[in-house]
Length: 88
Image (cartoon, rainbow, N blue to C red; front, side):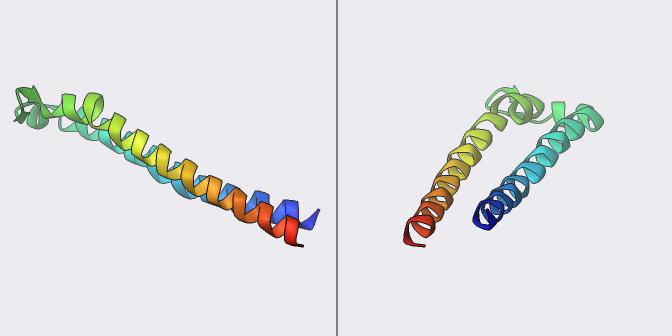
């Protein structure tokens, strides 16, 4: 039972270490667009205003990249745990 608790704590700290900063990042983007909307809407990239890029275009590749990285690290962690349990 002690191994299971250590596994759960390790996975929880990893998930919170990724999830909380990501959530804060998304909220910060929306706050930036809301609070500095006039200034940001004047900047254009490839004929789209910057606020479109921030909330509609850029957030998705960032999310998918983080998701792919997180899943690969979580799978490595589970493989390491399985190896420890089988060896021990």
